[in-house]
Amino acid sequence: MPTEQRVIASKPKIGARPTGGAPPEPAAEEAPAKSKKKLIIILAAVLVLGGGGAYWFLMGPGAGDATAEEGHAEEKEHKPEPGEILAVEPVSINLAKGHYLRLGMGLQMSADAGGHGKPSPAPALDLAIDLFSGRPMSEVASAEGREALKAELLTHLEEAYHGEVIDLYFTDYVTQ
Image 1 (cartoon, rainbow, N blue to C red):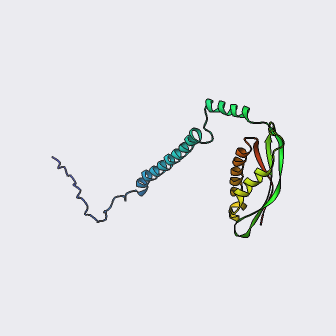
Image 2 (image 1 turned 30 degrees about the horizontal axis):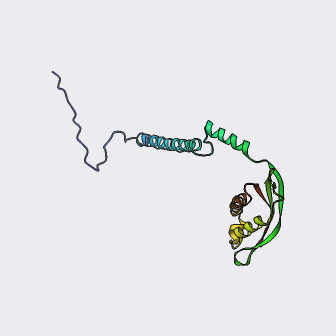
Image 3 (image 1 turned 90 degrees about the horizontal axis):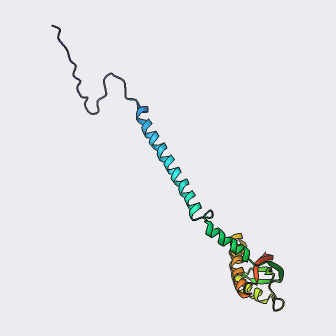
């Protein structure tokens, strides 16, 4: 009867180099790691884009529903009709550190303004002087600073003229 031989492999010692056989394939081990990295990058991109889209439609400029749109339509209907522009002569205003601003304005009045005579430019000049006086040159000269000051001045003008001023135009704006 034939004798059966069995080969029992012994475990290699730690740190020992394998004898014979094919070395393990590093590409096979890197493939799952690369696919995991790709999956994580794709998921991160989807979350970022999805979050941005959700913000845009739920809370940002793209947000809106039928009731909000109806409200905007009503505001457009009640917005006063533009009338004449009240020219305010340019005035020199002292800024910080010896600088100055030469400021001229045009006030867009509503069509129903002036029910009690022609509006006076004096309150507009007073408010402009109060707002711009002593400001640093960097705030007045930058586009962002100028727009912020213009919006603040318009708010004060709307109050002072009891809603008869609907917009503000700078006709002269020179800094030195």
